[in-house]
Length: 210
Image 1 (cartoon, rainbow, N blue to C red):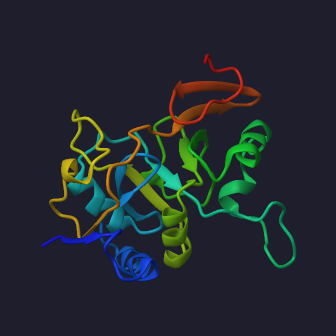
Image 2: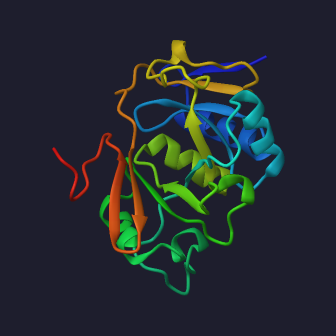
């Protein structure tokens, strides 16, 4: 049975964050409001959680997933060692991340060594984003690890911007934040110094037509 939580009606926003983080730490699939669309989320470091996500949203092998990263410090220091997910970003991707993260920009880059094989596409790339949603950032920090995110619909269906349009079978927790913008993140592939926009979305990047 899926537990549904209305974020606006909740007595404590922090309590909803912790409930979502606890479910994610257990390896459950949860529906959360993301960058303008509702999405399924699981922890990115747990093969069993990824298998559960595959059951909820069957997906062609080798397509890869989007991994969400918590907001990082502007520069590594002795107190905050380099993040292995960010450390391997090509220089062009790192510049885009500094300019637009946290925000609605997903970067397709070579997969770092810390990524589970299930997360990567056939060509060895992975999609990374540090979300601009304060709620999602709070869930990431409370969970303590990166999360996988994908729209909360069945393949071939439109991604949902309204909670009532989400498919929640097999989901432990679903958080209702009301109607969202419907704008997905912009997806850009970075190959060396070349940036190719694969999907236009909520954020414009240099070189993308207005």
